[in-house]
Length: 120
Ligand code: HEM
Image 1 (spheres, rainbow, N blue to C red):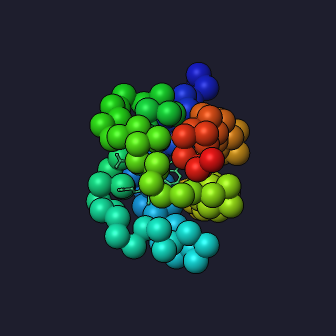
Image 2 (image 1 turned 90 degrees about the vertical axis):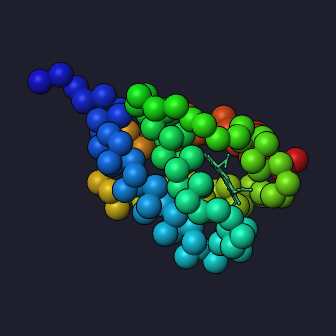
């Protein structure tokens, strides 16, 4: 059998939807960062994250949200905030049983966004 694609390793669209749900539950329960999400439209955030992760793992999706710079510019996100969110994402991927190699491939694709998300 051919190797599964990265998109398949994430369980395609249903797997990504379940992953984002796991991620948002963790973020909203994470006292290090959850205050920043109190006033946020979580349905929009959920849907944009599903689109974005789908695109980043090579799925047949389109990201329809704002750029990372636009959406995080006024949030004063710190290095520690960024690391906390990545930790929550890794925990969510572990909980979903996503293979370690596939996890790392997504993390490598998100890493360059750091410069647009963390405030200088
Ligand atoms: C790799 C890291 C991250 C990715 C991929 C990411 C991705 C996204 C996406 C796709 C949106 C939706 C943009 C839109 O509505 O058009 C968003 C919004 C948001 N992000 Fe992030 N984000 C990351 C890191 C963080 C961190 C570290 C924080 C703070 C702890 C954060 C806080 C927020 C908040 C509060 C919003 C909502 C802004 C609003 O609706 O006005 N993000 N993010």
